[in-house]
Image (tube, rainbow, N blue to C red; front, side):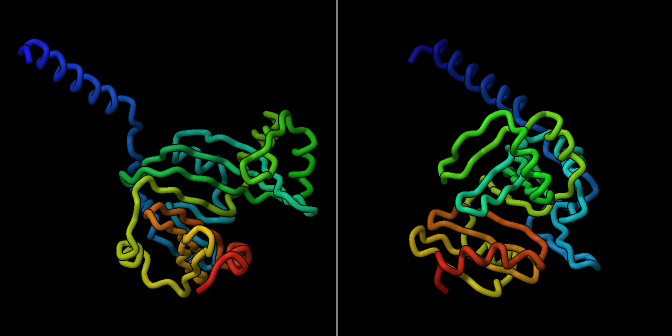
Length: 225
């Protein structure tokens, strides 16, 4: 191959790599340890993880740490109950140089959410059949002061079982979903459910221990020990 062509290709590759580095957000590094396996409960039994306290830390405070507003939506589940939930999605957040997506569920009563649902600007259907509602901007703004009730952490890296046990310890129980093969590592005393599929993809759910039954209930029918 002609030397000038080789140099051109190398130059383009270097520029592309530099461009990628420039586009990548700076990792969030402060004096607080924000690692997914550092989980504690405070004196009131609330889960503390990523430097946040479930039931106390507000969406506004999370935004200040993440340096992003996130995407706010209202979801309505299937069935006669039609349970509503306000969720905020943050994409590709870098904490302690670990890259992950976050989904936060906010602590808002059903009456307030029902009123927001009626004022919603647009309703669409999700893959699971539930409804996704784009909120009125004023309603979305008011949610900033609501506390975070639950956190779903979606790491980009795949994790093997040995690493999970090394970092998080032996779970109180393991449940395997019959249809998907997803294994749930359950830590009720820590308010943690780690779901790992056969390829190593992981979803971590953090709640207060008092709310752990809400995670366990759907798994009881879909999984086996």
